[in-house]
Length: 140
Image (tube, rainbow, N blue to C red; front, side, top):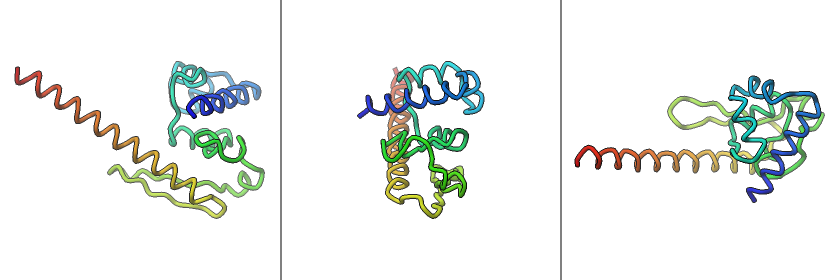
């Protein structure tokens, strides 16, 4: 599955480069480093929901297609004209509010929310493990 996601990311790279965008321009637009974009396009970095939605906002690339392989790579003319995309609003406490517009499949939103929550849970576990290691080192 990860290979399929990497193939989709590679297709995005080809698409954006075909439109004349350079990695530096893409990085600046996304608010990430050029090295990150390069690693992402090579399959050395993974893409999360936040960056997927930024790609949609900037280049009309479907986050559902990019993350799950569902639908088409680029947004349909109708959805671009009517701006039909779920909106994630970070409220600062780790919970994200989701506003669903008409035409957005709720199953896709549910998958993205579940992926984001799982990612947050895993990060919390990693932080807990690091804190335990630090405490053990200080007690020695």
